[in-house]
Image (tube, rainbow, N blue to C red):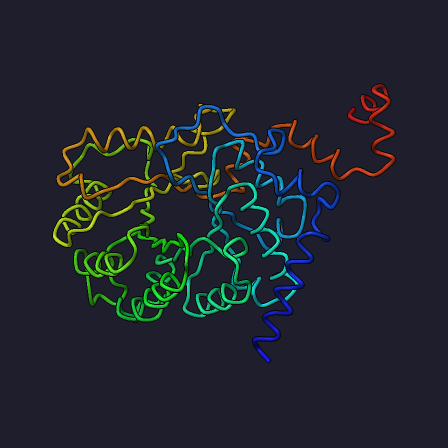
Length: 363
């Protein structure tokens, strides 16, 4: 019965993708054709040497899923050269059958935009739900491209649990998901402090276990390294600073384990938090592109005295979070106008014929 249910659900999802999309008319041109210059514009200044350009998407379930905000998000990502979205609220979404369908539809849209989709999981239960989802939809076009852990949540909220619990109940299931994928699916391990919540392991002992876990993978997995500092766009010059020592520890252990570690550097953009790079990115502030922070950081890293740099591969950056980042750099008006045309009814088309009426409506 379960197999039949899975096949029926997949059939329903496949049909729905081509009949119930918010862009019903001309769907081939408007959603699933990556060659469309109008809907797939990218930042001309994009640095091709940066392979990972991710954005954490908060409030996805309540504010974005199943609405025009999905397309606003995807166009905003193209506008700002993001190639991956990392979604929160996944566990809650997967508890609801209809929301699960909407999630699958969104994943397909994102892939049509050449944007990868990663899910956030902060518990073994969430990982199990995601594994069921991956198996249900089957096709890589509908599956997530990776899973990002929230080690911080485990580390701060479960003070009586050792690293062994994290490894057994989160990292091992992740490895199983990775092994079962027939494409470039990524484990993305969030790391804030190399410490064990229960004090069983500290510093290098935890790091060695994490890198040993990565070594058993396919070489594509990543560490999401927290970098929430003042002037986080600049690699620290003080060798005694916490962030400098974290990077050095990773390089030292990577050398011992004979593994090159893929690191994604995290940047904070919350407007209500310090330290934050909100003003650094804001069009009303310093107006830097998101990639500028990473390029500056990367240059500082290569010019630093960090030892064993060859064992560190700075793949790119991840920005926290979308709700603030889109305030710093709003979606360009011409994308919004495109949506009005796509979503408009006959009355909207009549209004388009009368420029004077449009001006009055805008006022």
